[in-house]
Image 1 (tube, one colour):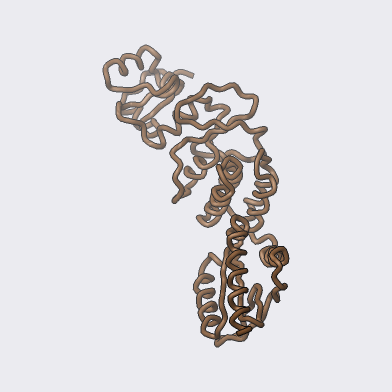
Image 2 (cartoon, one colour):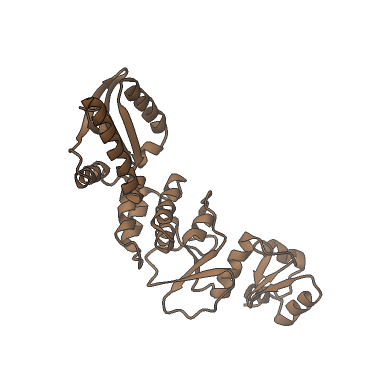
Length: 308
């Protein structure tokens, strides 16, 4: 539906998204292609691709680039996804200047400079945000970002950061791994999501015991109870005969006062004569061999000391 009158430029600026509008919106506000072309020719506005017009001639800002990506690929079918959708939702501390957009696999869309286009098999139920820029909700965006990541380490980071920053809960993340079926990391991503959500609290200790057997180490004692100055402490795994303790930290160790409590406990163990090795459950997933090298080296060194 076309506006009854052509809106003034100052009115357009109030309605624009980061001072950019689509040609369809401009037409709705009374600006046909000829009127827009005259503004561009006069050097007051600038066209960016086929569908986007900036009400200025400076480079587009981050939000403007995202709208350009949506309009250029087709706003009715495209959505910001993956890292970009997470950034719109508030993710900080992760750098990716590309604009990630998803469309369903049978959509025919043009290539847009600076846009990384992903074709998904289908849209899952309630995956799109109900307000703001067309984008996937954080849980779905995180799982898709993990599937599209260049490495397992990057995938794990893109799963854990949205939970740490309260953009999504661990349970929502686990539900999204069941709904979103990517082409890569089909076992890794659900496993990491369960670790983040602590869906199986003993998972790290169980995996660690298996790794010890594979390295020829004697089985450690699990869930050892120690009496420390302020009370009892439960240790994940220990070889008490040589004074070696291994702690596998799930995500619950990262919240609130848990890191401080862990540090006091570790200090008390060291003072009492134990050697303590720590690793996050995520680290155990991503680089278990490197950690097990350290465990084997510590076990060998303490065994030699005990024998001497």
